[in-house]
Length: 195
View 1 (tube, rainbow, N blue to C red):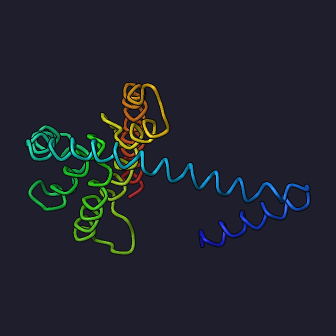
View 2 (cartoon, rainbow, N blue to C red):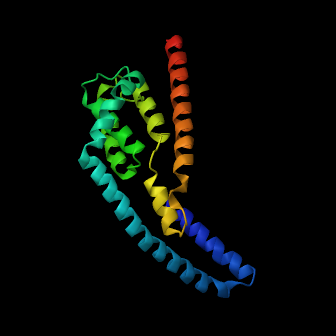
View 3 (cartoon, one colour):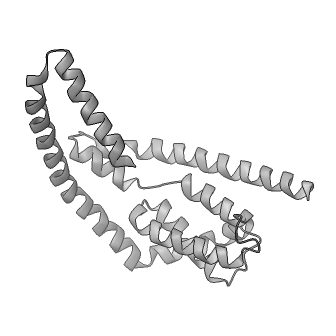
Protein backbone atom coordinates (compact mmCIF):
# COMPACT_ATOMS: atom_id res chain seq x y z
CA UNK A 1 0.00 0.00 0.00
CA UNK A 2 2.72 2.48 0.98
CA UNK A 3 4.49 1.90 -2.35
CA UNK A 4 1.37 3.08 -4.15
CA UNK A 5 1.46 6.32 -2.16
CA UNK A 6 5.12 6.80 -3.05
CA UNK A 7 4.38 6.17 -6.72
CA UNK A 8 1.54 8.70 -6.55
CA UNK A 9 3.81 11.33 -4.97
CA UNK A 10 6.60 10.75 -7.50
CA UNK A 11 4.31 10.90 -10.51
CA UNK A 12 2.51 13.96 -9.11
CA UNK A 13 5.84 15.73 -8.60
CA UNK A 14 6.97 14.97 -12.14
CA UNK A 15 3.63 16.11 -13.53
CA UNK A 16 3.71 19.40 -11.58
CA UNK A 17 7.33 20.00 -12.65
CA UNK A 18 6.38 19.39 -16.31
CA UNK A 19 3.36 21.71 -16.12
CA UNK A 20 5.31 24.49 -14.38
CA UNK A 21 8.21 24.26 -16.84
CA UNK A 22 10.74 22.95 -14.29
CA UNK A 23 11.20 19.45 -15.67
CA UNK A 24 14.94 20.05 -16.04
CA UNK A 25 15.31 20.49 -12.27
CA UNK A 26 14.14 16.98 -11.46
CA UNK A 27 17.38 15.11 -12.13
CA UNK A 28 19.67 17.49 -10.11
CA UNK A 29 17.20 17.45 -7.21
CA UNK A 30 17.01 13.64 -7.22
CA UNK A 31 20.81 13.28 -7.26
CA UNK A 32 21.28 15.94 -4.57
CA UNK A 33 18.67 14.31 -2.32
CA UNK A 34 20.19 10.86 -2.83
CA UNK A 35 23.61 12.28 -1.92
CA UNK A 36 22.22 13.77 1.30
CA UNK A 37 20.47 10.50 2.16
CA UNK A 38 23.70 8.52 1.80
CA UNK A 39 25.62 11.07 3.91
CA UNK A 40 22.94 10.93 6.62
CA UNK A 41 22.96 7.12 6.64
CA UNK A 42 26.75 6.97 6.99
CA UNK A 43 26.65 9.56 9.77
CA UNK A 44 24.01 7.53 11.56
CA UNK A 45 26.11 4.38 11.48
CA UNK A 46 28.81 5.92 13.67
CA UNK A 47 26.45 7.50 16.17
CA UNK A 48 24.10 4.52 16.40
CA UNK A 49 27.06 2.17 16.87
CA UNK A 50 28.26 4.29 19.78
CA UNK A 51 24.85 4.46 21.50
CA UNK A 52 24.03 0.81 20.90
CA UNK A 53 27.40 -0.04 22.44
CA UNK A 54 26.56 2.07 25.48
CA UNK A 55 23.18 0.36 25.76
CA UNK A 56 24.85 -3.05 25.55
CA UNK A 57 27.18 -2.05 28.39
CA UNK A 58 24.16 -0.93 30.42
CA UNK A 59 22.45 -4.24 29.75
CA UNK A 60 25.49 -6.39 30.62
CA UNK A 61 26.38 -4.32 33.68
CA UNK A 62 23.09 -5.37 35.26
CA UNK A 63 21.50 -1.92 35.26
CA UNK A 64 18.57 -3.25 33.24
CA UNK A 65 17.92 -5.94 35.88
CA UNK A 66 18.09 -3.34 38.66
CA UNK A 67 15.50 -1.24 36.84
CA UNK A 68 13.25 -4.29 36.48
CA UNK A 69 13.39 -4.80 40.28
CA UNK A 70 12.66 -1.12 40.96
CA UNK A 71 9.68 -1.13 38.61
CA UNK A 72 8.04 -4.32 39.91
CA UNK A 73 5.70 -2.58 42.44
CA UNK A 74 4.75 -0.03 39.80
CA UNK A 75 3.97 -2.78 37.28
CA UNK A 76 1.80 -4.63 39.82
CA UNK A 77 -0.21 -1.43 40.34
CA UNK A 78 -0.69 -0.98 36.58
CA UNK A 79 -1.34 -4.64 35.78
CA UNK A 80 -3.34 -6.05 38.72
CA UNK A 81 -4.80 -8.81 36.52
CA UNK A 82 -1.39 -10.23 35.59
CA UNK A 83 0.06 -12.74 38.09
CA UNK A 84 3.46 -11.48 39.36
CA UNK A 85 5.26 -14.68 38.44
CA UNK A 86 3.72 -15.05 34.99
CA UNK A 87 6.15 -14.62 32.02
CA UNK A 88 3.95 -11.74 30.84
CA UNK A 89 5.00 -9.64 33.83
CA UNK A 90 8.66 -10.29 33.15
CA UNK A 91 8.28 -9.31 29.48
CA UNK A 92 6.34 -6.17 30.45
CA UNK A 93 9.06 -5.11 32.90
CA UNK A 94 11.84 -5.73 30.39
CA UNK A 95 10.00 -3.72 27.73
CA UNK A 96 9.33 -0.82 30.08
CA UNK A 97 12.97 -0.78 31.21
CA UNK A 98 14.26 -0.83 27.64
CA UNK A 99 11.90 2.02 26.69
CA UNK A 100 13.06 4.12 29.62
CA UNK A 101 16.68 3.63 28.59
CA UNK A 102 15.87 4.53 24.99
CA UNK A 103 16.55 1.02 23.70
CA UNK A 104 13.70 1.06 21.19
CA UNK A 105 15.22 -1.64 19.00
CA UNK A 106 15.46 -3.97 22.00
CA UNK A 107 12.04 -3.01 23.35
CA UNK A 108 10.13 -3.99 20.20
CA UNK A 109 10.73 -7.79 20.29
CA UNK A 110 10.21 -7.81 24.08
CA UNK A 111 6.96 -5.88 23.62
CA UNK A 112 5.72 -8.42 21.08
CA UNK A 113 6.61 -11.20 23.50
CA UNK A 114 4.69 -9.41 26.27
CA UNK A 115 1.61 -9.11 24.06
CA UNK A 116 1.84 -12.81 23.24
CA UNK A 117 1.91 -13.71 26.94
CA UNK A 118 -0.92 -11.28 27.72
CA UNK A 119 -3.00 -12.94 25.00
CA UNK A 120 -2.49 -16.26 26.82
CA UNK A 121 -4.13 -14.70 29.90
CA UNK A 122 -6.90 -13.08 27.86
CA UNK A 123 -10.30 -14.73 28.40
CA UNK A 124 -11.82 -13.26 25.21
CA UNK A 125 -9.31 -13.98 22.47
CA UNK A 126 -11.07 -11.70 19.95
CA UNK A 127 -10.95 -8.60 22.17
CA UNK A 128 -7.95 -6.92 23.76
CA UNK A 129 -7.87 -7.38 27.53
CA UNK A 130 -7.54 -4.38 29.89
CA UNK A 131 -3.94 -5.39 30.59
CA UNK A 132 -3.17 -5.39 26.85
CA UNK A 133 -4.69 -1.91 26.49
CA UNK A 134 -2.70 -0.64 29.47
CA UNK A 135 0.51 -2.10 28.09
CA UNK A 136 -0.08 -0.57 24.65
CA UNK A 137 -0.82 2.87 26.13
CA UNK A 138 2.20 2.69 28.41
CA UNK A 139 4.52 1.39 25.71
CA UNK A 140 3.44 4.08 23.25
CA UNK A 141 3.81 6.95 25.70
CA UNK A 142 6.75 5.57 27.66
CA UNK A 143 8.96 7.95 29.56
CA UNK A 144 12.43 8.03 28.01
CA UNK A 145 15.55 9.07 29.90
CA UNK A 146 18.03 8.71 27.03
CA UNK A 147 16.49 9.32 23.56
CA UNK A 148 19.33 7.63 21.70
CA UNK A 149 17.66 7.52 18.29
CA UNK A 150 16.84 11.23 18.26
CA UNK A 151 20.29 12.11 19.56
CA UNK A 152 21.81 10.04 16.77
CA UNK A 153 19.64 11.73 14.13
CA UNK A 154 20.52 15.19 15.45
CA UNK A 155 24.21 14.36 15.50
CA UNK A 156 24.08 12.97 11.98
CA UNK A 157 22.29 16.10 10.79
CA UNK A 158 25.14 18.24 12.13
CA UNK A 159 23.58 19.51 15.37
CA UNK A 160 26.05 21.37 17.59
CA UNK A 161 24.40 20.02 20.75
CA UNK A 162 22.58 16.79 19.87
CA UNK A 163 21.99 15.91 23.53
CA UNK A 164 20.27 19.21 24.31
CA UNK A 165 16.85 17.57 23.92
CA UNK A 166 17.33 15.16 26.81
CA UNK A 167 15.63 17.30 29.47
CA UNK A 168 12.71 18.28 27.23
CA UNK A 169 12.32 14.65 26.18
CA UNK A 170 12.12 13.52 29.80
CA UNK A 171 9.50 16.20 30.55
CA UNK A 172 7.46 15.47 27.41
CA UNK A 173 7.51 11.68 27.78
CA UNK A 174 6.86 12.01 31.53
CA UNK A 175 3.72 14.04 30.78
CA UNK A 176 2.59 11.61 28.06
CA UNK A 177 3.06 8.65 30.42
CA UNK A 178 1.13 10.40 33.17
CA UNK A 179 -1.74 11.17 30.79
CA UNK A 180 -1.76 7.58 29.48
CA UNK A 181 -1.90 6.11 32.98
CA UNK A 182 -4.58 8.56 34.13
CA UNK A 183 -6.89 7.88 31.19
CA UNK A 184 -6.24 4.15 31.40
CA UNK A 185 -7.36 4.14 35.04
CA UNK A 186 -10.40 6.32 34.23
CA UNK A 187 -11.52 4.06 31.39
CA UNK A 188 -10.95 0.94 33.50
CA UNK A 189 -13.13 2.38 36.28
CA UNK A 190 -15.90 3.31 33.83
CA UNK A 191 -15.73 -0.13 32.22
CA UNK A 192 -16.01 -1.90 35.59
CA UNK A 193 -19.00 0.20 36.62
CA UNK A 194 -20.82 -0.66 33.39
CA UNK A 195 -20.28 -4.36 34.07
